[in-house]
Image (cartoon, rainbow, N blue to C red):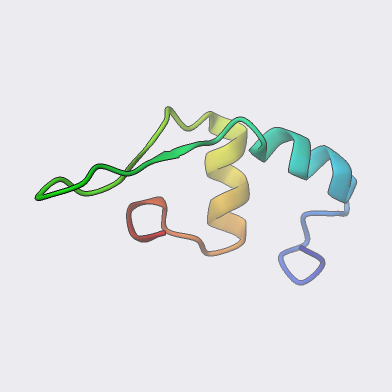
Length: 56
C-alpha cells in the first residue's frame, strides 16, 4: 500500500474497511467465480495495487 501510494490520503484501516464489503462467489462445476459489485473506490484501490479483479 505504501508503494502504491495509497496511504498518503487514507489510513490502512480506511482502505481495509472500504474493501471489506467485496465478496468473491465461487460456483462448482463449469462456472467460474465472480465478484460482487465493485464500487468505484474499490476499483481504484485494486488498480493502484495492480490487482485484476477478473483473475483474482
